[in-house]
Length: 119
Picture 1 (spheres, helix red, strand yellow):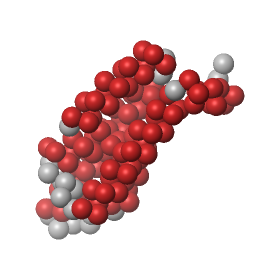
Picture 2: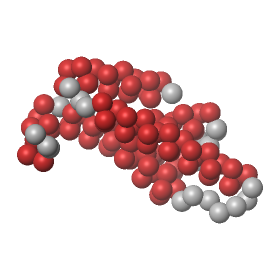
Picture 3: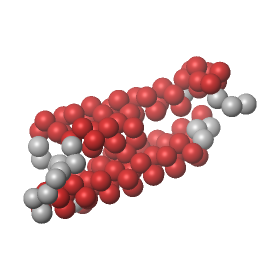
């Protein structure tokens, strides 16, 4: 939870200093809500002994920006919070996502994206 709060702060700082579009923050928020919901559905399926959501799907959602919601789900729902192999891959997806965010939000990354962005 602390990391998710730190990311919100860092995003706000990046938005102020580097003018990161609000759509990026809204994307993180939407993906986090979706990821939290997917974790909740998977937790319910586990309890009911039904078809589970593949771990690969959970990792992809975290990688593309839903990791804050995954962290909240792991804490609140106590789901996917113990299995070491899952946690190791999860933290790699978090690190990669944050690294890509910082790179693309930085002035250097933005200059690389400029030719592909609408004027």
